[in-house]
Length: 425
Ligand code: ATP
Ligand code: MG
Image 1 (cartoon, rainbow, N blue to C red):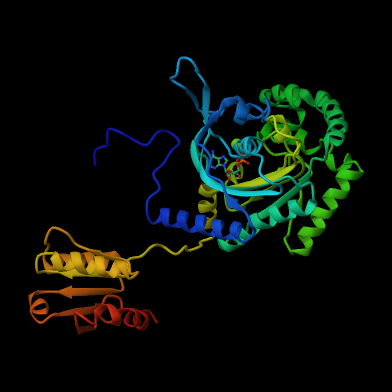
Image 2: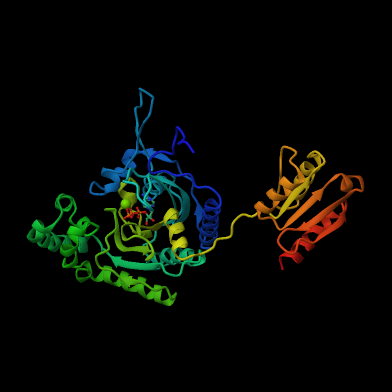
């Protein structure tokens, strides 16, 4: 086959059935999970003022390197926009704009855009689902958020995902820890990668987030934040851990987990799928960001949330061999009398809830039978000249022994549900 002139842009892909059926399935599991927790959906713009994301902090790669820029054409208001790279900042922007009653609990789904080096599980357009809870400092809010993410993976059938948990403490904790970390990194600067030496000057904490091999030894022996938590942060973290234990959600304490964004405080967490490549094995992550709303011009408001990558969740499902129900056709209508009968019958059956397909182009009986087999349908409904004249249809079990029976055309709709149920037993 010759290569087509146009390809999907670098780092993007077309997700087609049956993979897209898996995506829909995951999205509906997510929606159901979050609705069950009293979260409402937020549908916010795909693009935003660049400054919304710049508040996430200069040392974040998302802000410095990964954004797709857009410029408003209006010469009087040449706004600098970007395709959103994540949704927490947009949601905090929406919060400061609308000032909803707190606690404000929202969930979202949608594409995010990051100018990354594409690899398996790392794309320039990818799908995320997530949730945010704004306006409560209660550690039970942290537990609720983590539990909902965890239940989502569970309902998706994943049994190997691991929850990594850490606390970054509050501002006081961070200041004390930063001091110790800077001292340590300065001493070991020569062993760090060039990129990390740069990061170190802007935000030493982010050096711990480096996945570069060269940095691992230094990261491994760095001081850990858990030794620096002040009483308030320690107490918060203890209640979070106790809550998770009460819900029987396993976690692993990972004192070096800092996560990508600067604005995290206290609880941070990540879900990893051990079946995936380590550079791309995070299927989700989140944390508390008590200063972000204020940074965006809103009132001081605590927040906690998570985001889950659907593309990587799909890979994790594959790695665990989870079969996700696909959207199969139930009935295939075969019409050798010209097609009108197939047209009418398909519509009639679809209206009463069956999924139905048919052939076009007035194909031969043989060709339509082949299409019926390929469709995966349980049942074929055949209408030939004899059937049409006698006001009947022939039903053929496509998956069993090929049994055929004749049925009155009028009683078809009524009889079908029971017959299909009988066949799929
Ligand atoms: P990573 O360290 O892998 O780059 P991240 O810390 O940048 O992840 P977050 O910003 O926390 O990721 O986004 C939450 C989730 O979104 C990630 O755990 C991952 O599953 C998914 N994700 C992030 N970037 C991508 C991408 N470029 N392609 C596909 N999925 C992604
Ligand atoms: Mg990233």
